Every structure is written in C-alpha cells, then in structure tokens.
Length: 231
Image 1: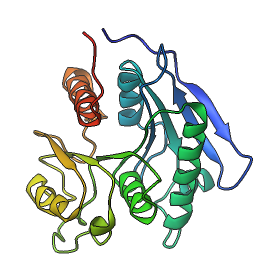
Image 2: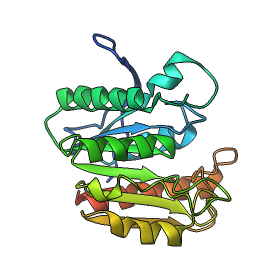
Image 3: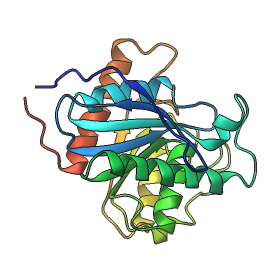
Image 4: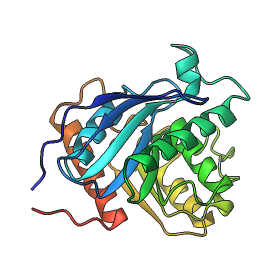
C-alpha cells in the first residue's frame, strides 16, 4: 500500500558553491533509493510535474530532492545562459552528494528537459555520479530541427537510463528517441505517454488525466529500478 509521505520540507546546503536549494520529500519509512529531480530551462524546483512526482514517489518509498539549478537560483526568469551548463552540472553533482549523505541506498538522477539533459551529461562525464537516470521529456532536438540531435554524449553513458516521452513532444518524436537510445551502451527503457506534450503533466490543467500520467510514470520508475511495490 502506498503510504502518504510527509509534506516536502525546504532543503539547503550552501556550505560550498554552487549551493543546493530545493525541497525534500521523505517517505514514511527507510527510503528504498534517493532521487535528485530537477527542472527544465523555463522553470524551477517548484514545477508542477516535479511536485507531483516527488509526492508520488515518496509515497512509494523513495526520498526525493527536487532542486533548483544554479542558473535559476541566480535569476528568477530567462533560460540558461550560454556557457553556464557546467555550473548546473556541478550543482547536480553537489545535490547528489547531499542526497547520498542522507541515506546509503541507490542514488538516481532525474530531470525534466534541460535538467534531464544535464543529468545525463554529468553521468557521461562521471560514471559514479548516479546509479540510474530518469529523463523526463528529453529535449532530443530543437523544434523544427530534427536533424540537430543532442546525443553526442550518449555513447559515453554507462548508467541505466529510463526515458519518459510524450507522443506530442515538439522536441523530438518518441520514435526518434527510441532510435537514439540505441547509442547508449547501458540498459535503457522508453515509457511513452500517449497524447502528452513536452510538459508531460498537462500542468495548466492537471486534473484526473494529469494525475493518471504521474501515477503511470511513478510505477514505471519503480519497475525500471527493480523496486517492488507492495499493494
């Protein structure tokens, strides 16, 4: 049975730069794994998709830290500046270290769009950065430019990776992403969400369908990680 998690609590680790800031969802018991979850280029750690997934996964036994990347901590609006991605990856590395300090189980890095891309690039740079990746709406290519694939680092990934992708995502089709994941020399899986766009959650009108999508993603995450869910 899914147990209701405690309300998310503010989290901050500013002892070194870049600072880690976000919200921590604790499960009701000992966590089966820890997940660092971050946002896309137009949002922050309060994105509706991240909140919903944090609550759903904490209810299934995971500790979830949804963190705001350094570029968004630096300014409230606007996309990441060119050349700032390395700092965002450093922020993810520090968030992963903070989560490892909270519990000794497996560590998963996850992110929506830009956040997922940076998580995957960090894992390609450092094979010990995470035990698995959860990439939500990976931005495979810019809209209207399907030839400009963002897969240069895929052959360097040795981390098991779950992709979650909507069939109406303008940043690459599910079919193209399915082909691209064959470049990764590690176990991968693709969870396709029919009718979903880049936000996956239909954040402006989440309703019952949005809740069902979150439940499906949460179940898919547990299945990919091999974490048994009690009923």
